[in-house]
Image (cartoon, rainbow, N blue to C red; front, side, top):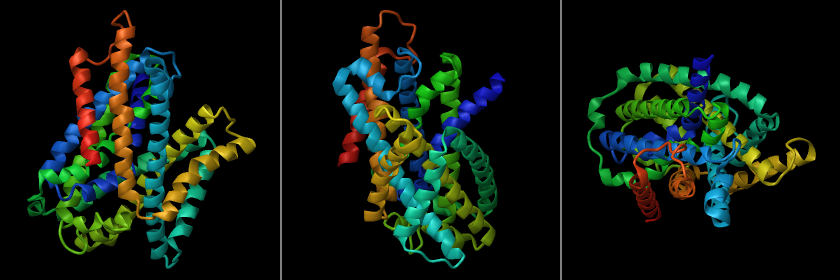
Length: 395
């Protein structure tokens, strides 16, 4: 039973991490090259996992059920609460905009294969409407749908890697510039933005700090390995240059469906094309469901409204109308939205937790709740890294 719960916790982090951002990684890091992308993936994993442990430390000082907003309020007062509210909403709305943009692009591509051509705005509406019904069904509905999709996603991922690997040309891994990574750092950060579910995991594991540390460490290591292998396989098959190359896709309005077409042209296999199309669809849907549920619950709690009836429908509209409007105005926002979300991740899941932990240790007379080693030095170092990342993102 304990092992089953441990695996469940790890899978929750894996599911939160491996979403639509995974599809953006080979495209966004193409200019940097494979060796630089691996180095920066490991660096971002370390930074964001450290941030997640800081979130756990701060959360353990408060009663069970406390979220990021109440954590900020208790340690930093009203200013911290306001920053947490704004950043959290902006993070979830930008992620939803990214997944609606990417998901409707994949949806449109699938419809095109069966000779149904719809305008982009209509596929965005249909995608949002269909999957918002699952959210309205509640967490139990989302859990069952997500569980099936997760096993399907991991299974198809392994199958794709096995099938595509023989087509890898190691010469394609050569080249790349470390300086080019600055443009994609925020997407790498977003890919490890799982710390928002740490308060929920704390409740699930009843304050068992040792188990929670294991869940966070192993749960974040699996996406890291998956990302590195995925980047290596895609960069080894799809050329960096050219009309169908990864660099060209960075500026495309249809980056997700474009990557499917580029892979299809490179390996000349309908099997791979079908599996990859299915994989991209599942990635978008699981990411969309996870973020939507988080935002739906956050709004219900923050606005003190019931999740059913007319109030539930109002929350549903508040959840989906703002990001849908953004996508209808700018359909090609997928990669940009993931970058904006990265800025929010740095503020909410790295900078704020470090400041909150610092403040929490000053207020706490005992060392019992200290989860992260390194004392004040590690907190100062984390704050400096967060500020450097924000400066890079803004330049």
